[in-house]
Image (cartoon, rainbow, N blue to C red; front, side, top):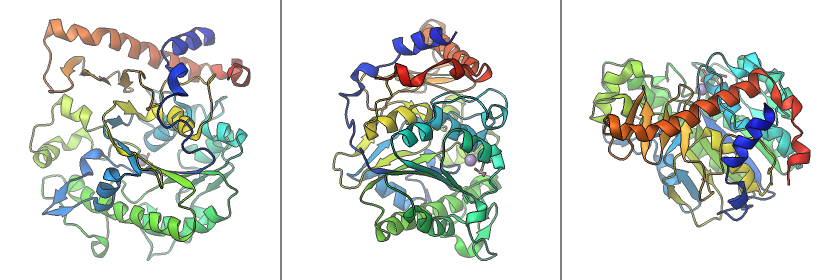
Length: 411
Ligand code: GP9
Ligand code: MN
């Protein structure tokens, strides 16, 4: 079966053009600082509560010349939440429909990003101030080639610098700098933030924005913790500069998944000023994806429909690493004729023209529900989505990468 999947992926991948595509190798030999930003959704960007911007730092960053911002980037996670988002990014495979791959298939053979980067001479590490066994991370990280995992034990957690889930993001970044400085270059460092996590509680004296006013306590406080994390990121950029770690690095920021579920649709509708129908609900699954390249001047906002599945091939592209023989369901975001849809785990998808969810086909530009005849246009993509989700499941359930020699098929 693995060769059938290989054939499908070859036929559906624009690998040939990748090397010539925009930005190939622009980050060659640079460090990669990847920040997985907890529960961050795009609707936070440019939002205001009582006239105050929620995310002033990220708002400026996404517009700056040295940042590429993909405004139509979707998370694709399922029950495994943060761990699913990690899994998708590391492997360019889909998460499972049930359970978290990090728990159910942590012992499989993978060709994960940290392993590839390791082979290319990168020191790879993860920074996350929670218990190391949460989501079975310690086991999975060992398997997929991370050199170091700086978990809760690496941090000084005191009553003053922690609340909610634990160490607050500002202290987390601050205390991480010394570990970063001890790393061999180039390094790949993944940071996973924690403060902006359900139930989004923040001590009042640490809040620099009002709560929203609706019937959802969760949505109301969401803006306060988001603002806090925005400030933490701003400080982190400054700390990287002060530590001499900024110039030779690229910094990638990504939201891991939604924080506001459909349970809060009424309050969300009030905030957005429109009803949250299935179309809007799907569009709310957009999370920030920004690539910040110090010194680069060609940044800007990109419209392409992309998602977490595309992160691995995109990073390898930016680093100038040819993973030609890799098996990925995603594409380099800079390829001109890249894949034309982003699939969600439940079979929903977003393409350039259509958005499909709840078995209904919408016009992506207008949000209009398409009647039967026009809705036919969603069918061929729907079939491809089902096929891909199946193939990806089969790889995971059958541990099929055991039978695939990644090295000899690259180049
Ligand atoms: C836990 C943190 C949150 O360590 O990553 O996980 P989540 O609940 O978002 O999956
Ligand atoms: Mn999360």
